[in-house]
Length: 488
Ligand code: NAD
Ligand code: 6OD
Image 1 (cartoon, rainbow, N blue to C red):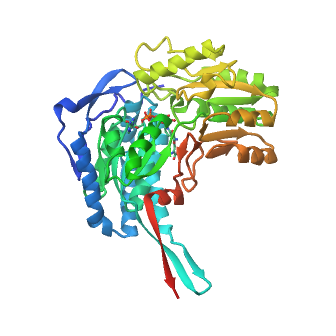
Image 2: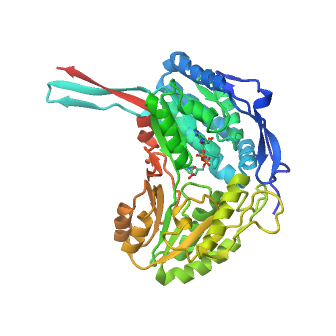
Image 3: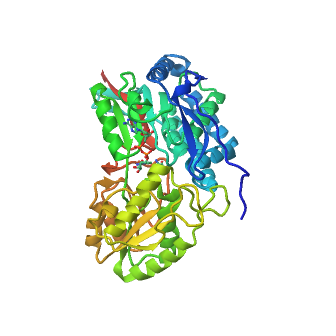
């Protein structure tokens, strides 16, 4: 198998405010590192507090400019054009994403970037179908709703699916007529920087989309979270960060939408089709190096098929190819960076202290001397209470545990502070409905995983999030609603 590109792709990342890239301040530049090579690939300009203020001011002013007068059809056309431009530049964007994150180029191309385009195309269509509610109260009064954009929205993003998640927020935000100040994760600034150029090329008026780079605490993330002129915050990232942002946003009572961490159960009943289960479980365990908030990192297998499942699952996992993200054969790339690499490895060590047995994987591959690569790792022998079964590892590491009854596995599945996603494998229709209804999570997949329809509500319960986005749920967040009552 050959390399798909002869080299990685990179750009330097400036802040974009009111339709212009702002000159970088030399002492606020920080290095951007390619996690697959550990090499510096460029720099990122950390925004100052004043620049964040300017970005928010530009977004506030843009609400009153031409953008505020755009018809729904005009907004829809611009969204469609942005989606088209993403597709026209799909290979460049995929190369930037793969270089920035260490994920396989083909995954970036097929999942991240094509989905980013789809986010715009979907909301371009969806917004034209929205209607308001009206209620005739016994011919005494007519009540109807009117909606308006919530205003300036801050978007604080993680590094795992950078452009996919940023556009999942930006597309409905623009469809609703809001304006945005986006902050990508400090580790993955490149595709967001290209996106603002594409938005401008699509004809978005200046100030509607602004981009500030930087870190969380004492940097752009914190400045946005507490900013008095930010009306709403949509945040995806760690649960702990969500609580910090919520505290910062509280004094100015901002609307918040949070997509947070997960420790998702993958429940395999004995009556399921094991070959299909294993094909999908390889993805739900290790796709994007296990760095998808929806990955099923707790695999519960009914005892009668536990040994058979493990034998096949371990064999197939050993076949996964780990290495250069730009090689066509690569299934597993690098994890995002040094700190995260060390965190994931520390959980693998902890698992052994917790009496876990490593069936495959367990460290960095001996054949790859550089880069933050971790072998896909399967652990058994852990108890439900062990930290490796309770805490989010967010890497290519899964724990497999046996169960004996539906009641027992339901109790295990719900025994966590998280409630994001769950997968159930069974051919028993009644059981599928019964178990799905009792799992405490925002998303339940039966006999599949990460099958998305953007009309459906997406989000988590418990410590996995606040609110839902997708279809009409996105517009509930990005719009304010007023009820008008006319006495007849
Ligand atoms: P993170 O919380 O460390 O960072 C996310 C963003 O928040 C970054 O842009 C960061 O700069 C910013 N940030 C950090 N501290 C901040 C602060 N004090 N104030 C304001 N902003 C701050 O998360 P991460 O490590 O980038 O991403 C991994 C986490 O994201 C995992 O926990 C994963 O489960 C979660 N995630 C959840 C979903 C979901 O849909 N539920 C999706 C993707 C990732
Ligand atoms: O597919 C989506 O819309 C979505 N928000 C995915 C989140 C994945 C988390 O890593």
